[in-house]
Length: 249
Image 1 (cartoon, rainbow, N blue to C red):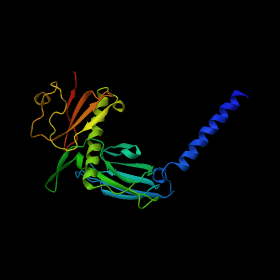
Image 2 (tube, rainbow, N blue to C red; image 1 turned 180 degrees about the vertical axis):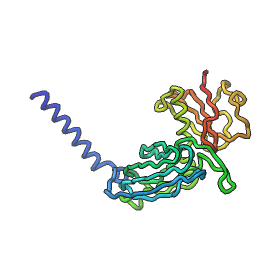
Image 3 (tube, rainbow, N blue to C red; image 1 turned 30 degrees about the vertical axis):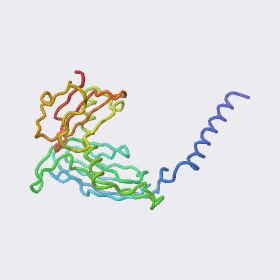
Image 4 (cartoon, rainbow, N blue to C red; image 1 turned 120 degrees about the horizontal axis):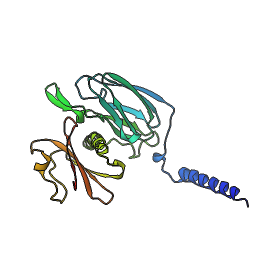
């Protein structure tokens, strides 16, 4: 038999087997869904509020979302939703449009991905880490499935804060020449003063110039062998990188 015919037959079998597997064995809740419905939603960052308005958005799994996002501040912000691969800078006094399909059900933080400072809002300090919202995507496949069930406020706040901290940390790591896709992150889930984690005498608090009163987020990057390679410390309010320590330097 002609070898090219054999190749074609093999390819057809591979494609067919993949289709059968997806149809028979992939759970319904894991399949991508597209409804064809479009939802146009406006989001605004008002001046010196460090907040998105609205902070809660609902959609059905499979909907196409069209976000029109306006930044009214005199400084840049960002808009990101990690689960859908969205990360875009919002220049000062600008409006951006983002379109995507919410193929997954669940609760997903949208957050500011650009360090944007802090200030007082109605007498309370707010900043970069407060600028988050929740996109709740309802499952249209199974109302009783755990997939897509609303997560607790505490767990959601942790995931949102984690994303807000990692964004500027990744940017700094890439500036230093690191490939963050090949590194693992260990994160301070308590969102408080963390001290020093590794069992190493290479790192000293005084050397990092971090006081015990200063609030920061600690991002530790590890290589594939779990060796610590880079610490990045983020101000807990402004989202700015306040210190960097390269292990072994």
